[in-house]
Image 1 (cartoon, helix red, strand yellow):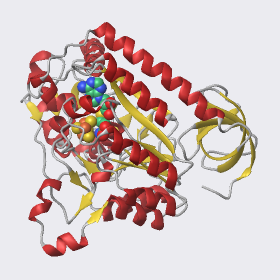
Image 2 (cartoon, protein in one colour):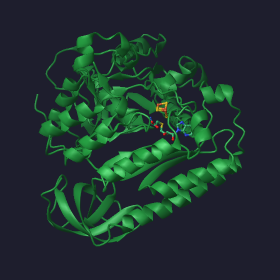
Image 3 (cartoon, protein in one colour):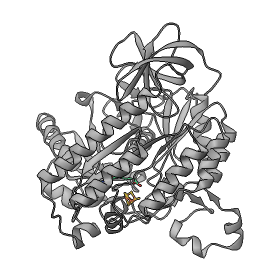
Image 4 (tube, helix red, strand yellow):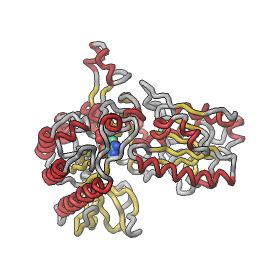
Length: 489
Ligand code: SAH
Ligand code: F3S
């Protein structure tokens, strides 16, 4: 099959099944149209592409138009209460559609499906199918169950499922950058976090299938991949199986095991013309080896997303984050030393239970030390089932959480502007991704540091690496003028 077969099309049908069977599937082709909507983290968006692939094999085509769908699938997020409420609202809307066309099937996938399981069918009458993050290969059977008017729920978590054998169908892709999953699940058990419960134990994907996927992307013209995992530094391939079972591995498995820095260098060597990013790094697991590999290869982007969550040792301990502020600063110092031009971003939680004004001040102080390029900042949201929910009373008033969050956001904006101003007058290498949202006459792309750059289009095109001179900036965007095609990446 041609590699371009499933490339995103401009019209509403993202992809079609090959029209060469006499089977029941091809007769039903016009009826089998799936609309997939995704919420939450990058991993969810990557998973939806896996699901699209599974559906296409089952005779579906994927549509971007809700009103022509026979199947609506929502890939959901449980990370904060607000994320779940957004999905509930959306389901209300889907209900109004289903009232008009009762033949439509509505399925819920992802973390909410895993968290709420069967309860979803009772709580939301509109839902026909519930499928957790490790059970997507079972979707064709579940759809059959729906057709037979049986209960269609599969929320089994797996020890080895990585979907490594599935070639994802790129949805909403710009054709330039793509996500490639390398690990699934998380073993870290941060006390506030629902992910270990919804995505199960940590396991890594076979490096061969990772390389195959990137090879395929390269063939299709992609110029950038982001290696994805809840905790990429924890990548460990020893022939399959859970990370926690590595202690049972044979001596040969141990000797030949691949860790994240090994994987990074293999990928960087194999694809020198492709920009490589990764997310998320966890301070407790990130090694100096990774930073050194980043320095060694020009095509590994100088950018690290390094969530810290709080600047207080006391709170970090209560969060079960297994490092101190001192160790975090040492890591930051090493990054700055080995990779002086590295962009660094963060995640921060305001108002974790028992957080005092002093703890909050420590967070602001930490931010002053690092001066992050940007960050993702949240008010603490208690998640049912987590250790924090069980053991620590959510005792910070919502108003105080908001106030602290706003102070954190304000500080970040100041730092972001400080960072973007450093680029004024400089020449940066930009990978063009798409037309700028601000103006159709401008391209939008990113630097290695992950900073967005916009500039007049001239004769350049998406996928070009371009040297751009920076003329002005906001806290979030650099504005410049292209000079020439870059000989950098
Ligand atoms: N695996 C990543 C993050 C996963 S969740 C890591 O290593 O940090 C993404 C972000 O959501 C987290 O970094 C955290 O800042 C935020 N988050 C997670 N649970 C939360 C909760 N209960 N309330 C508020 N924010 C939360
Ligand atoms: Fe969540 Fe901590 Fe893992 S934030 S995803 S439990 S590293």
